[in-house]
Every structure is written in C-alpha cells, then in structure tokens.
Image (cartoon, rainbow, N blue to C red):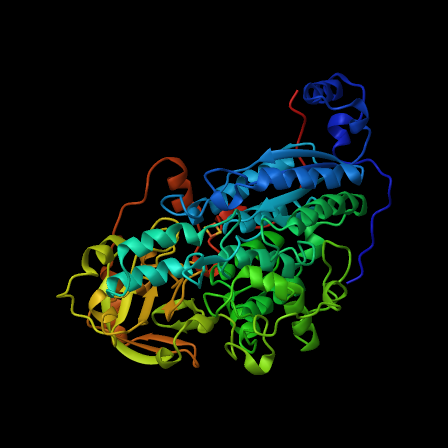
Length: 580
Ligand code: FES
C-alpha cells in the first residue's frame, strides 16, 4: 500500500477549541492554562492525548504513569502538546464477574473521550489483557491518528531453579496440590516468585498475545511487544512512540489506513506462529467489526491452519517473554512469515513504513526460543475452528496447547450446568467420571456468566489427577486464560444461555471430537436434539438495571467478537456542536 501523507502545515481539529479569539476559544484555553501551560502550546501544534489505563487496581499496568512521562517527553520533543487522561482500566486479576464484561465499557469510554476532547491524535497505553483490545476498538471507531505502546511483560519468575510462568504455573501448581504432589506451603512460597517485577504476564498469555497482535497489525512500533517492563529500552520505546504520533498527526496517518484486511491476516498468521491466546480470536473479530473489515471465524481457521508455532514460550513451550525479547522478539517472527510468503509485506504500519520494511533486517539470537520451522512446536499452530451440531456457529481449540492423543476422541459427557455446579461437584470422589469422559460446562458465555469468564480450562477431578492424568477434553462456551493449556474447546456458539445446543447436552450423551476434520458432534438423534431444544428455558433471568442490563441486552456472540451490537463500525471524530 502506498500512503500519501497529508500536506503540512494545516489547521488541526484541536484548533476548533483553541485556535481563535472568541469567548469560547478563550474559555477552552484559559482553563487549560490553570495547569501552567504556556500560551504558545496552543499555537496550532498537534494536541496528543495519552490514553492511560494506569491503575493500582490493574497491577499489570501500575507502572504506566511513569511510562507516560516518557511518552510526553517524546511528544514535546517532536513539537506536540501531550495531555494525559485516564480511562476505565480492565484489570484481569481482580475484576468480577470478569474483566471481559468491561472490555466494551472501556472501549466506549475511549471512543467518547477521544471524540469529545480537543485531540488530534492519541497514544494508547495498554498492558493487561483487555486493555489492548478495548483501546484499539475505541480508537478504531473514532479514527484519529493512534499508536499503541504497551507496558511490557514482567521479568521471568523463578522458583527453586525453575521458570515460573504467570498463570501457567498457577494452573500447574493447583493441579499438583490436588494430585498430592505439592504442599500448600510451597504454593504460598511460589506466590511471590510468580510476580517479581512490574509488567504484564510473562507467558505468551493474552497480554503478550495482544501486544504481539498490535505490533503485527501495524499499530505499534516494531519491537514493542516483547521489551520487559523494567528494561530501559521500554522507556526508549515509549519516548519514540511519543515522537512518532506527532508525525502521524502531521501526515494524517489513521487507524483506517493501517487496520486493513491484510493487516488482520498478518496478525492471524502471527498468532499461529507465536502460539498465541485463543482470546485473540474474540478481540480481533471485535476490532475488525469496528474497522469495517469483514473478518470471520473461518478466516482464523483457514489462515492459521498451515502456520507452525515457532515461538517456544509457555504455555505451549518452555520459555518466557524476557527470553523472547533477548532472542529478537516479534520482528524475527514476522520476518520468518515474510520469507515464507505468509506476510502481506506491503501492509502499512504506524511507522509509515511497510510491514516488511520494518522487519527485513531482524536477526534471531536464540534458535531454542524462536525455532526453525523444522523444529516447530506444532506443525499447525493456528486456531482450529470446530463446527458440528454442538457448535453450529463454531467453537475454537488451540492445537499447540492440546494433547495429540485427544485430537480424535469419542467420550461420555459429564455435564456441569454452570461454574458453581462444577465447583460443588468436581472434587466429589463419587463423581462418575474418568479420563475418557468429556467434561462439559454450560452458561459461561458472554450472556451466561456474564462476560464470558476464563473458566473453560476447568481443572480435572482429583481422582483422575492422582492417576497421573494431565489432560481431558473440556468443552464450554467460556474462554480460557491465554496462560492456560489442555485440550480445551472454547467459545461454543451459540452459547447455552441463549439456547444453543450446548444447553441441552446431558450427562451420559456421547460426544465426538475430530480436530483434523474440524468436527464437534453430539451423538444424539436429530429428533431428540430438536425436542430438547424446543423444551429449553433460560437457566437464569436477564439482569435488570445498570451496566449488567446494557451488557446482557446488547452483547453479541463469541463468534463475532462479543462486541455490543450498537458499537460495530466507525463513527468518526466529528462532534455536533460546542457545549457553550
Ligand atoms: Fe494482567 Fe495477565 S493478569 S496481564
């Protein structure tokens, strides 16, 4: 794609607020000056918002105030006026019922803040899982020049000589306790070892995946995704991002120039190569909806099918983000895709250069961390999209995190009606279950939980774990943490709470999985299935009042990204009138 920069200088949007001598212009400027801003900062230079998800309730983003200062330095250096503002921060580790319930709220916050304020461009400061898609979605709907800078991952966790991966170790250790292989005292001691520096999860979980997606989409500067939060180069990246957004405003380089179909295809293939989170499926579908790109679940399956996973990071592999950075980071992966003919080389990035121009000189410094294709972790690392009478609108599975021996399986369903039912019965020694069964969890989708919690990787029953079994097939309409692993079928659509076939599965039914054929089948006669569906009634009443009601009324299915129906598309930057 050839990008034609806009002529410069020209009158910017912010001058509608600041550029004149009317009563309203004076009003807008004068109140800003109570912050000690000199008059010449309102002279027509680019006004850049720093949209910050800093919050002490979002520990992964708690260092972003400091990083914002580096962004400001860069904006000032390039001749812009930086103005930092907070938006709703979706902290994955604390928010109830689920951070995902608030992604769309944060996206609305961002969209309205960008449109309503005198901004010419914006730096999106993100880190923890949902903060990245939320800010990208809001920015895409407004379409002011925008660029992402992430907070960066935590340093490696270490416990007794072993790497401790955020989230991944938590799931492994809690299973080890149930199996009688680890003491609770050791578990408590490992707690601090998991989180030893500022930053987001250090595995290739959802935060690192979404940072990689932002870079692969072309919405962040090259190399942004992997730099650890505490590395001095993270601050350099923030400063360079600040400089870059000023030029983007001058050139009028907008998300609509970058977020093209080619960009999404690059990101999907990249996700396969890094062994990225299944959550990227939902977030990219939602972002594509904002950007007006017709992206579907089928695109995920088709584009990722032949992509080997070459990044050897937990949860699929052995290493952590710190080592990924030392090995060369995402530019190495994108270069590999480009060399294999699997990258749209001409896709434009926020740098003003093409995707290929940005990565063509990248070098791999550690072939154990970023492996050659011949030693890929998984030959087909993309997201497998399953269909069948149990998931008429699709379901997803991450082959690189699954067990090869379970990829073709027929087993007896053991059904949990919701997550509380699961918690109440899973440790019951009399539960009729063994490792050949298929665990089924209902009512954890977008409307059902609400917010589609990361509970799809439900832990195995203790009596199975004690046999040394580490994996069973699990099926739900939930999501799972990007740090989790296992043969876990997620995002079953339509979800149980709206009467999808998942709602009528009964314990004892037989379920067939054939990943190679992309088939997920409930072996119940069609007439019987239809009779069950006709008799179905919702398990719980719809919430009344507040955001929960808005969410329940308008959230769409996982198969299209779980955005609100009224938020799809681009609404632009225009505001109808001044307020005074
Ligand atoms: Fe915030 Fe993992 S919990 S990045």
